[in-house]
Image (tube, rainbow, N blue to C red; front, side, top):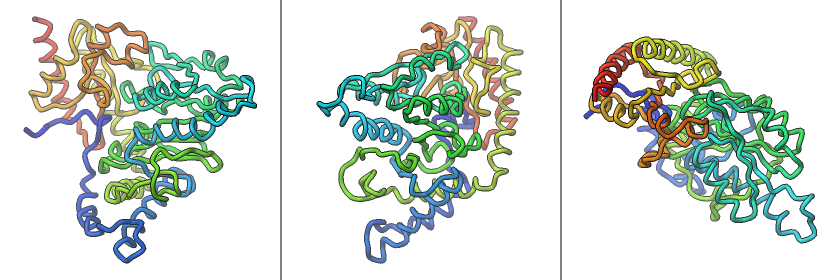
Length: 394
């Protein structure tokens, strides 16, 4: 059954129509980009051009970009790469006193599972971990961060924008604070790419993660920006791909789609036009929902958010029941992160923000895309009103 209305774009996005014909042609270049014979030349060129396009878009050097299999690997490479390159050697050096060792990471309480679980994993090797809380509006209190930034901090990992609520964090301000204590800053910008303009030189982060399938490209490729001078260890041992920082034959077709989308977005009007379109539709949707569905609440409505994302609580209703009812109407959305699917637990993000289990289970995450129309929103809201009225009678 074909989905009529797709409102789960933070989980993944459809392939941009203009890419399809181009990628069919690119499929003819099937060689290994590491081969020195003629079959490898065009694939190698495809990867080089993709890297250059992404570097232009992000305002960095192409040598600072590492292709990965996706955002989760990019986050793992950032955290594990720094830990095993810079932190573990200090812990193993018997001449170091405790005062001279930077063996602590700081992450927020609403980070993506690929950051949270990686940080927890590294505790086995001696990492100390601090969790920075957020409030019910999804905001970080910088006054709570300041006392945590001691001389034992090796890295702070904070996402640019939350994948469930859309809240945007003040990375520039955080960057200045982190630099003052001599630590590194990693930023998971997977959800921000393509929705807001990004200039990595101005952002101030040392490492930044991205994913291709969140920006209307193929699944299977991600990107990690590593600022010149920052050393990381490779997660995957093997060949010399990605300048020995990520071994393995590259996913040429997905990387091609990633680079072509970056080239498309080099037109500065693209992101700004879609930003305005999505924000206008989202604001209209939220207004209609609040007006027509009693006991509905937009989480952090008055704070800076991604233009496409809305997380809404519906008191006394079950989010999964609403989701399944909408799915039967061919309307797709979610109750939280796609990376937590299959779990019956309430959203860890909403619980970290201070909401109880019942409240966290009563939410829907609605994430618009470039393809979303006003008619989609009108039909969605109409069905949602009908479903909530029915569920309230049970």
